[in-house]
Image (cartoon, rainbow, N blue to C red; front, top):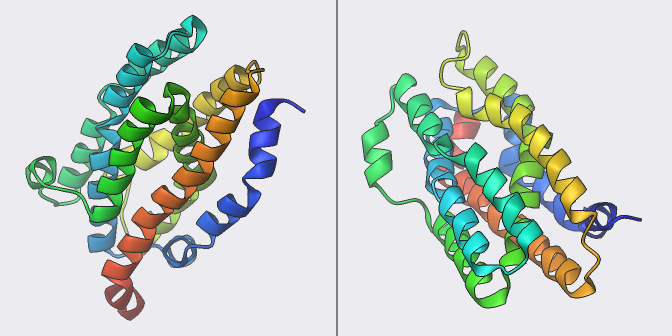
Amino acid sequence: MGFYDRLMAETVAERNDFRSIPLIQDVMRGGATHGMYLDFLSQAYHHVRHTFPLLALAAARTTDASYQKALLSYMNEERGHDEWILDDIHSLGGDAEAVRNGKPGAACQIMVGYSYYAIEHIDPYALLGSVHVLEGMSVALAELAANSIQKSLGAKGETGFTYLRSHGALDIEHVAFFKAFVDDISDARICEIVLESAKMFYRLYGDIFRELGARHAEKFHAA
């Protein structure tokens, strides 16, 4: 068994917990309110804008040339994705500049803060746990969520859904790249770091959706 298959096998419980978050279940079944979707995009902006700096930090901290090369390649594809989110917010009538200049919820702040901590104080390879969770869940859920939300909002065309739809498709390529890269990891210490990091990020990323659900539960179920 390659390390990717082991990673998938040993995070089944965490992945199932993430998928069972009530907000995610509700959105898949019935879409979202306009306010909830804008709030989701706002939180997404505030963690996606850190993707490039986090990749750069990990590349600067690692001494592994092959890992550094992979990170640099990934950086070239991730630059500017936060602006896609702001464009979606603006196209849906939200205040993109207020989001740009604002602060995310506590759960998002904690996840981003832990990302920097993990790279600096655990190991640069810990970033791979975050990549595995955020991109894996994007592939699994983004397109389905976009369809459900678009239907519930009665939105026509792709306006306002660039981030969700593009990331669902783009992350399929990233997951394939990720799989090929991690399957070459033979160092047991690194494997454990990535595995433990992935488990942590399932929880931290899930907390963003739990927090969103708490903020919008009454409005959503009344809609």
